[in-house]
Image 1 (cartoon, rainbow, N blue to C red):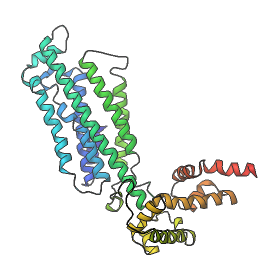
Image 2 (image 1 turned 180 degrees about the horizontal axis):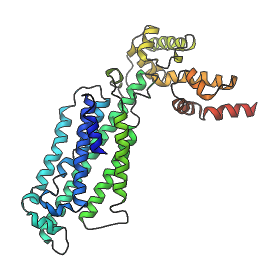
Image 3 (image 1 turned 30 degrees about the vertical axis):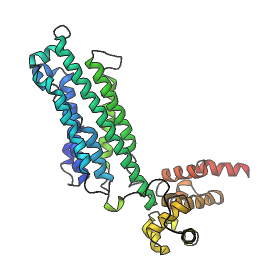
Image 4 (image 1 turned 45 degrees about the horizontal axis):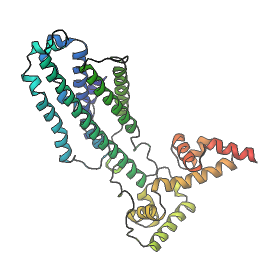
Length: 363
């Protein structure tokens, strides 16, 4: 799957997103080939190659973060500190592996595979090397997965601050993929350590390969289907947490009144592609001033503010008409029923159908 997906990418555009996806898939191919080399028993024909995939394996976490950066970040370049951190991983692995590479001959490596023929001293060196390499893999992978989580959260936050339709821009599939890959790589580290120590459990050689195949299949399908986001879809979220308001309370109250008037009287919320920029033009206030009013005065963001009016209109339609829920969802400005249901349940506390049914039963 990884190899075929890699070939498919070479027929696509040269966008940064595709470039970093190629790098990630290439590392996955090397990692999987290395595992196949060991578990298939092919290492007996070339024991000197055993372990050469380790420096590449530690790059998978950074590669996933770099792909996320190319896909979602407004920055066109990745900070040098992340490049240095990523490259330090393989360098440390190579240093740790030096005794294993140069103090143990291919014949001695082959002998280590059999408890009856292994040298105790060389076995200790091998175990120590594997333990340190696995620890480094866990540390680097966890660090870059955390960075990817933060990047995805920031991307979604800035979308909610600027757009009312974020479904096609939010890359929602990426968060569960991070969880799945994190679980797979954590299990891989555990399985690798147990195998190195000669311990086995009922899932050895079965559960991990199955999870890897599932995770890989989902990731490849989602990544290849992900459209390249435009520069307009990317941005920097406003500062997290409480901050000092730059506008006076009276000014924010005035802007809030303009916003409510635009929603109530002009019903701008019915436009499914309504953006902060469009609203700014309609009320003749800067985007920054509107964002500050929403966050500091109304304690919300653009996405939630607009959806609030959409849900109120939907509630009225549900109670006063017999229209289907899907039709109502599109009429009030949502571009998908699933998004409408999620927003409605979050605000009202129950699904649109249950809300309508409850009203009918009580009346």
